[in-house]
Image (cartoon, rainbow, N blue to C red):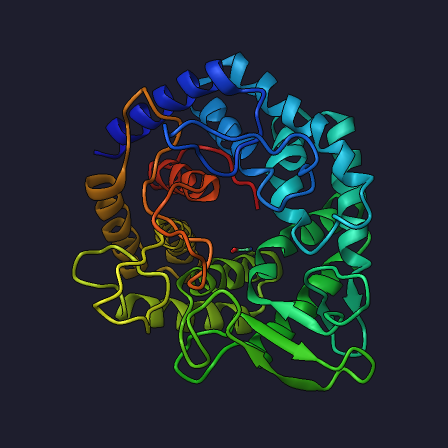
Length: 365
Ligand code: GLY
């Protein structure tokens, strides 16, 4: 099943690359064709995912046109590296899946240069008082005390920068942020908050916010997925057992809340009468659970990942050559007006997870 699925995903990715490889997609139009964030939205946080998919399928097939299309996206992102207002906590998503993948596969020194510039900027967002990496930007510093669970996924940019330069500062900052996340985001039941708010001067915690989730006390599913995968990655890079324990608890909470359908809502607290779904949460969790299965040596995490991937491939996968996307029903946020539509990061993590299940693809993190 997995070989066949990977082959079909690869064929569709190559086809879509041929007709739209120059784009940097985020969402799709009514006909299911990619939009393009290449212009004034070049700093958008999702702008590395399409290149990430291209590199994954390049690693699977060796098709040279995928490699050149991915490298073209990476060059376009140079404009984002020069956009101080657009550089935020999401540099890992943008440059691990472009420059990082390129450097892993080709050792291009220009890609290493980009990776280290992005890592230096990310390290510069560290607040030493609160020991957290600041989330989004604003003009008046009102959000200077905000940190978000998603940021765990960007920490490998710092771990990699330390490994590549021999300078421990980057990895030290990453591990300090991950420890803060363990102490201030995870609840006793293993679920996580989306946003933690600190006093940016004293570092004291002021509270939490539900962010893209339904409400206080809820469990935004993509945030839970970021926690599973993100804590696992910090464990893989540091071997600190605290992070493995956090990843296990996040995974156990997630697995206990998977509905009978195997399809994932936007918030685990939203109730059966709400039809908002998020295939991206399912795909991220699946890839994180596969990683955790290896790190923890527990096959039940791989079984849960397979359950999620099977539900996605049977119920939500779009293999028609007429459309550009793979997964149909994602949501950016519970509070959005629009729900259940394609999103490029769902397709990336689905591709990554299916290839990972086969022992193929490239490790980006
Ligand atoms: N990192 C933003 C999101 O998950 O929507």
